[in-house]
Image 1 (spheres, rainbow, N blue to C red):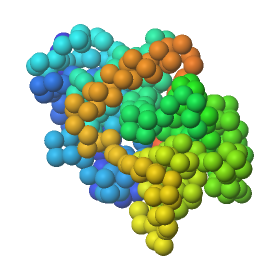
Image 2: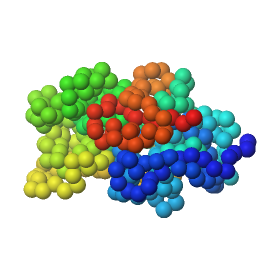
Image 3: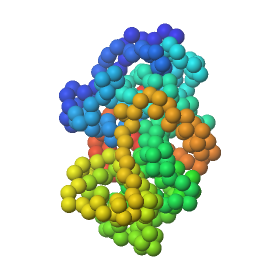
Image 4: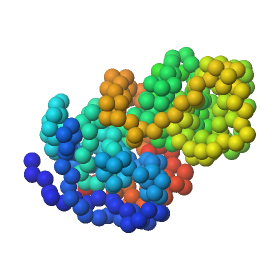
Length: 333
């Protein structure tokens, strides 16, 4: 298959605001050993993209400096030592970078087939979110059927996926959101109680809903602002999984006594620094456990907006404004 030598991509004129995202032209990447090249039909916008745009989340040394961590499209070239893929396969993939482009090289172990019945937009809304939720909520925090979980940021891409997966695997789901509309959306997705954090104290609500026992697991993207109340809201042997710090990284004058008294476990992780082998392990688990749920319609990506890739700046502004429910996706001609 003959490939063009150059391609369009969304680049940064400099670190800063959304308007620094502009369409540029550069060389089409070639797949390295262990990689496949995807002609990108759609790419998801994620919070780490915003941080990278601002200069707060640099890509790994061997990754593309172009923004974009999840793509969906067609395999158009295959690198050495790659098996299981053929030209023309439709895949979505967790990229290490380079997703806001017409072509993106991704490790073969981080790609999955489109779930049956999915188009590129819906498939592009899956990888970064589902990899993150599966790794942190199920693999690390070990959420089990019959347990309870509090998911902060219930209408984010992460939140909408986490609510559905936790509910599908038999957990009782609580979540937080900032408006009545967002709380209603969380209930539709499978939460048993959605807490409006602007008018309710989630710690008090969890105590009331659980008979003061607390929840088994908390998936948190807020960090410092919620840390003390998270500890109070966990049950004995509870697990707190932190995936972001939207509410700050430094928690001051917080009592750590609940960690000892309730035998709590605290953990956190970022997806991008994980090794290829670790990401492939998550990919394999998703293919076995989550993909059947997507194909059966029991779990589905929530799409808030679909924009042409030339409007990436508008997508970033939308994400930073915070009114979205679900994913923001870019499409490519």
